[in-house]
Length: 165
Image 1: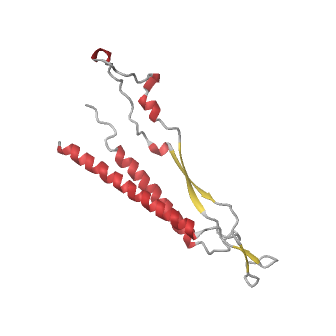
Image 2: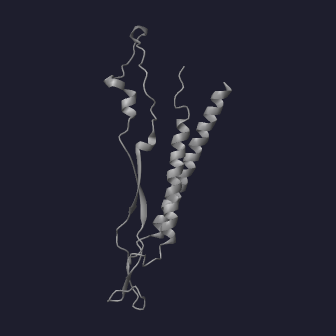
Image 3: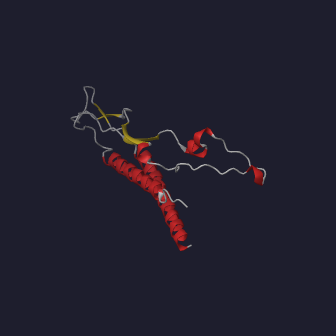
């Protein structure tokens, strides 16, 4: 019996935990800078978010290696040994890209003629960060983090139970 990629469940959960932690850090940064009307470049703070994309899913390729199809077996004579395949979870770092994106949506214009950042008409552009949206995103990231912890604990329990056999 060949044992490859024994702890792939741990790897997937760890990657998910890492992404959600980074996401929570970025949301916290957005909330902390929600009232900043002038940054070092002279513009109001712009909301940031992560764009996470995965490259082509190799799952189908691993189910049907070398162009072979899965056939329905109707009797004992029809059974053909299924060929060895590569593990479904290979180096995921190459297949996942995480990009920080700045939201270029303009913020609200507020009339504050006494503010030093006001334009000629007396309006100041505020940050485009919406606290309610950020809190909803934070709750979503927290729930995703908890789901990854649950999956990690399930993988750990499965591994432990396998060793007890």
